[in-house]
Length: 116
Image (cartoon, rainbow, N blue to C red; front, side):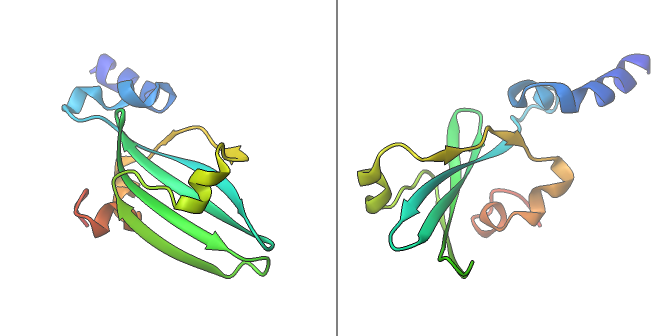
């Protein structure tokens, strides 16, 4: 009993690959990559991964008025104009998505990667 409580308290602090290892599946993480888009707009990729595998990509292209167009692609994706740009100008580290929040991510539910 003490061990279970300890693991529940410690789970959020562990790296993504360790935090859910006990249930037989790897945790799903999300990270971002941002690219400039002329004129005065930008593209942000939300990269969903399970282990070392990209399972879904959300692309949000927003103009200077924060009007955005969003698209979802299964697997890894990068638009040709962003591939030509090269390295993203901003990135965020991968963050584990809590099991209770997985169904809130459209990219995961749209392609049947998690149950609603």
